[in-house]
Image (cartoon, rainbow over all chains, first blue to last red; front, side, top):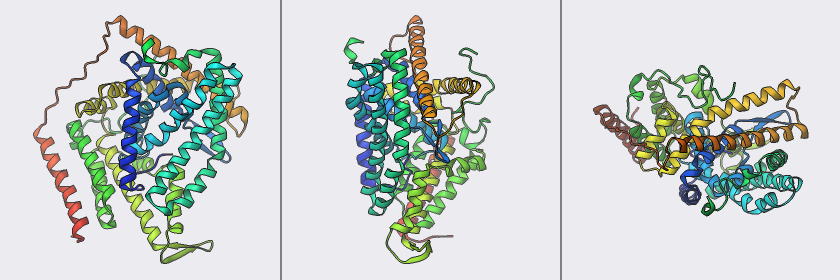
Length: 207
Length: 265
């Protein structure tokens, strides 16, 4: 869900960019130099994952996996997803330049919310329970992103409201797919390498 | 196969123009970033269609100067997010105004059609300019230039690491997909497909984390003390100053047209 340049009004762009800067700042503060390699490699993984096409009906969609990014990275999802969006805009022509801040906020804030809502369930319970929390996080992140994209457009002009509503309903199958996928990824990671959920997002003091 | 990155295979972020020739390739990366940003800010604030068409013409001109393959770049630009295209295409039917044509009994308004056209022109002009000026340089150069323009050091390091490993991980993704295919996996609309993709991404994350542990050990082994050296000795050349003036004049001309409301051609 990359909003393009020219669709949003100036106040929405300014507010969205300011909020993104705050989020990136918090994320960077939790990322001392020791954790930069892990954050970079994980951010590259999410970049590659966002290129994956998954079949849906007769067509296919790109994954976003921002729920999974939030579960693994916590607040560091802000800088990591910003880097991905910057590279996509410059090298692939996806999204735009003036909307980078708004797009970062729309994708990274749901990731951070999922981190707070679902991470306790993922670290605590059995792998099976963790998978359910992961699935919830995957669906929640897409739902929140769609709502934020809709709000950004609605604040820019009322004429976008009907389309924004339709897009929310059109995303319900995408939520189901990201839920299944995130649940499976969490299940696998919990069994193979549970530390994955504590690399970046654990408190920096113990590092 | 191991960790070898195929020397011949093109990377995902390789600049489209490999030749390093031409007017754009000679410009200072910092100047290119500032021009692209100034152009983007100016273009989003325009509203006249003739001004926007002129801006698009300038962007196409710079793309030609950068020796970008025009057809391929246009195809990339047009391949926008399907949902965003849908939202723009809905505009003629949701903006009230004078009806010009009907689709399945729904009147399309002139005002909505013009608004959709405005957004499409702005988005295309800015993205083309960004790809021409920024997408034609190495991603690493872009990161260094951003650092010297004041981007926080840690964010620049994050960009550098991400850029470094995107191709490595993309090759790993392709290896895992080949392994799935060899076991008879075919993507379809099924729970099995989505769960398999989930395992695929989970596996990539686990391997990525183990890789990052090795990277950190290798860095420590070489005496890493928490700082990389990014200082580049870039000096503005006469060509950079000239290009800055040319673009400043072009953007000022567009602003004049927008405000004065006259078009010269």
